[in-house]
Length: 120
Image (cartoon, rainbow, N blue to C red; front, side, top):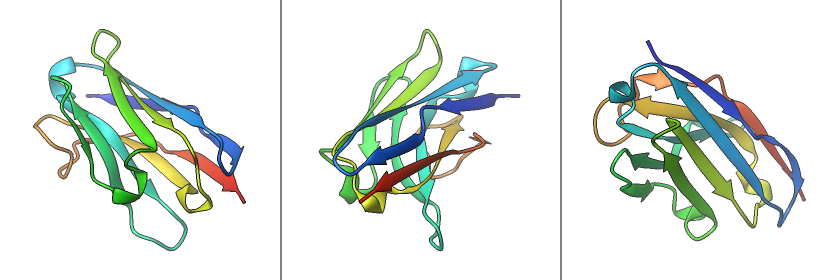
């Protein structure tokens, strides 16, 4: 069983930055791909970005390209999401996710979520 523990959310002004972290416990083989989804109030959960254990990245959301950077420390089995130039529209609960396979369209494990609030 894998547990994902997120940290780093909070309140920030528009234009500011935050870094989210997600540490995975359990077998590293169960977290071949790690990444982030987000869910804004009244909206569906959407895939933001993911990274494989080999370092391949995918930014699924066009709105974050150039502003968000995903990275990973395999030794710590931890994934990070550096969020710069935050906008009001980035306000959401951010969920860490992990998958045994490549890609994050099928999620095997979820974190509990961390709130990111951007004030305009």
